[in-house]
Each structure stands twice: as C-alpha cells, then as structure tokens.
Image (cartoon, rainbow, N blue to C red; front, side, top):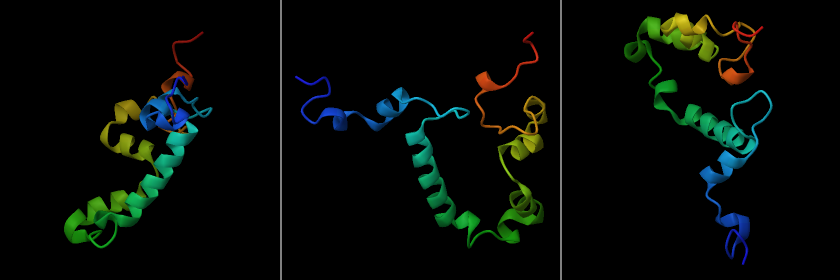
Length: 108
C-alpha cells in the first residue's frame, strides 16, 4: 500500500506538507507558503474596512493615519515601537530575513 493512502500525496495535510517543503533562499518560508501568504495578504488588504472606508482621521487620528501612510515595512514598525530590536537589523535587509542568515556581530 502507498505510504500516503489511496489518494497518494493529496491526503497530506497542507500544514504538514508546507513544513516539509524547502524554504526559498533568503526567506523564512517555502514557495507554497509564500504563494498562500501573497494571496491572503492581498485579499485582506482589499477587504479590510480599516484600510478602506474606515481609514479616516476620526477612527485613526491624524498621527495614526500618518503612521500607516508613511510605514514602508516591518522595520519601520519595529523602529517606532521597539527600537532596541530594530538596531540589530541592517537598513538594507528585510526585517523578515531569517536570523540564521543575518551576519552576527559575534562571529569571527
């Protein structure tokens, strides 16, 4: 009998399958996970009332709205809310780069 049962690989759970898939070089996730992330993130942005009809000064305040409009990525959020962590991420690098791939100040 096939290891995966009568339907073969189609019986493998999505999460278990994703965890066994190789990561994309320079990323913390696999190609399948990245594709799912892109699809879900774009849908979330398009349908979120807080980024559409409720994106007003009355709900966000002028400061909050300016933060959302000026933020270009996770590193901006880290700088604003936890600068001690942001200090360890080089300007030219994504805050989502796996830490194992970041140069360490402790290596020779």
